[in-house]
Length: 297
Image 1: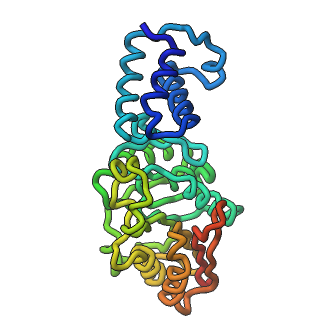
Image 2: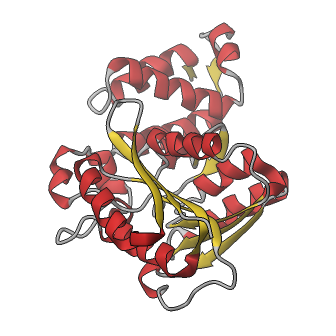
Image 3: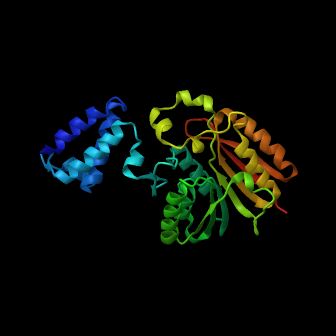
């Protein structure tokens, strides 16, 4: 039999090559809290010589083996927290990032006081952005959530259905390719278009960890090498062709390396429809977000 103390010590050592000591200890703590169904405070206070049952230990060992192979913690647990809401994640779906939480915060701040909003989320992935906005806006939100990846659709559907039920928002999942949308305008234009499209240049892969490269979907990470801002240009074309309402807003997360290039290209595409465009820094001071407003009628 194994005690909590013994598991904490041995488990931290098994994943020490992948994580710094403090992070490894935190991950093991999270595994214990999840399997024992206790809070962080309760785990701190529990007798560390408490024996783990055979069933609990088997579950922990299985999770630990997956972590030791490099699988991200979020996939092992099957969920993550994003902007205060629990989001299901699974292989085939991009794990939501803190920078995208900043994008949601930016949208919430700038759209404060608005009435019912029609929103299009391009490349919804797990559905984390509309779910987070649903938790903030409730029934004031009507969102169409576009996703092309068949692997991401089941996870997105479960998340969107959960938060539609609990928030009162209307969250619709649409299986569609962004590059097949031009020429097929919606019946009613959107007040907001939001997107966190693939924006990493393939050459940047050498700076990324094996946990990301080996497990997260490359199609959600990497932009085409020949034109790393192609997704932004296509979304801007949609906005200029009847998808975005007059006086509407476009919010996108982007690669700081191509921030100025993206701004210039979108300014050109929107042309006379453009009222305001700006780059906004993330918390680390990088140009991470693009905010656009079209001219009202």
